[in-house]
Amino acid sequence: MTSSIIHLAAEQKSAEVTDWAARIGWVVGLLLFVALLYWLMREGWKWRGTLQGDLPELPTAPEDAGEPRLTMTGRYHGSTTAGQWLDRVVARGLGTRSRAELTLTDAGLDVVRPGAQDFFVPAAALRGARLDKGIAGKVLPEGGLLVITWVLGDKELDSGFRSDRAAEHTAWITALTELTGKNSKTTETEGAR
Image (tube, rainbow, N blue to C red; front, top):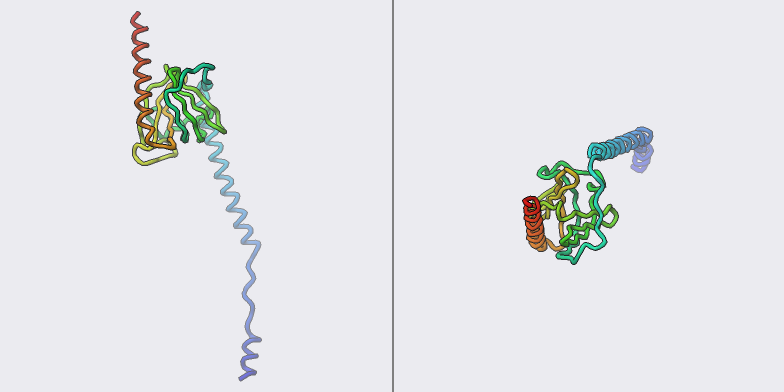
């Protein structure tokens, strides 16, 4: 019996050695495919920026913007062509998501974005605000996103913001509606003279 166990142990063979060349080839091929996808996405982003290159430079905040009416900290989720929530605008850094600090004054809306380009929306360029559920690349529960409509050059844009305290959104809509209503009355009065 002992000799038969020794004989069986002697007959066992070790497992097949993995074909490392084939495995490394597959891994390298997969990595090259992923790199190609990322490169294509980057080129698409740059191409979209080139197509939107006719947008003017973003305005900067004036020295004396006035007393703040409202302030908010939160996230900037991007800008789209007004009314087209999937048509992302990437030119002038408007496609870069970032933290944001918003300050609303009688002069307009100041958007400070650490790590991205800040911009200022003059009061005359503001068109309105609403609660929405999404903007290109970001979908939230109904009413979770503050969307501010404004004009840059001759293009009307929607910019999406989410406050750290979502309850602030309604106060922002009220204040922006009041400011845009006051500006439209001023414009009509000036035009009638």
